[in-house]
Image 1 (spheres, rainbow, N blue to C red):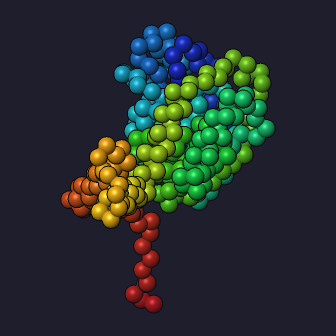
Image 2 (tube, rainbow, N blue to C red):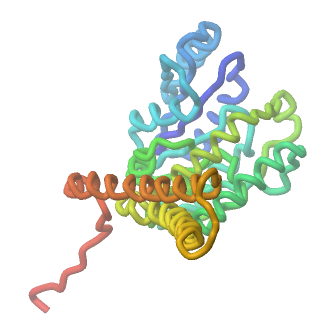
Image 3 (cartoon, helix red, strand yellow):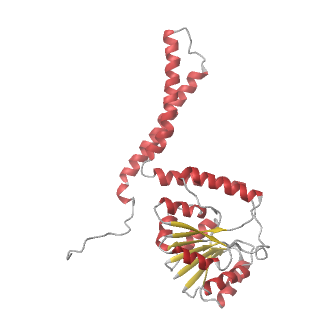
Length: 314
């Protein structure tokens, strides 16, 4: 069974969008459900969804309150899926209808398929945000898929349950899956035609993208140093401590063996503060190590995909 999830924003008529998704899903000739998540405060949108649901039994309407964000809405819908495969779709025209079937064909034995739109035309702001986020993910994790902002993804349910537990924005789902050892493959899909995308409007949100960069750094710490926090904090605190200790030693030696006074020396205050700061950062890592050690048994460090045993009759 296939479970499709689409998050629909406020002040939007989803009739044409969901109609296109319905045609694409019906053409698959397989059992499916489409979970549409909307803001419960939008009475107009709620009424439209109720009208669509009347003659579409596969449509599941989820009105979320409080709303929060589309990332939180996706996480809420992910807990209610019934299918073994989960397809995430954008709340606006993004890919051609036939691309959903192409994603199913590309899945094979992989755990996740990420759609990459071919020949898409981005504005200057869209291109800038894509390059910045791709460069950040490439620097932190060493790999990144080409169309990082495309929301069309096909993922196995058990993989989504594991990835969604990190509670980050959906743009990082492929990165988390790859870091967790799952097989992630990209497939090229056709973007929606210009006529279907005529009503969509890109809104540049600088603060939202700044928060995304901070989320990427937080994700890097969680994925790389969750069980060894001292390595992360130590790599920051130790250089600060050593530089401060070296500067302090130079000033003290100059006072003991020379005629350099330490009174009213800003350099001494700065070097001592660096020593204290370095010790504090390293201490944070030690506290984290103690917490991790105390809860180590409840933390899942790895998953066993399969166990191969020799047949005793052989």
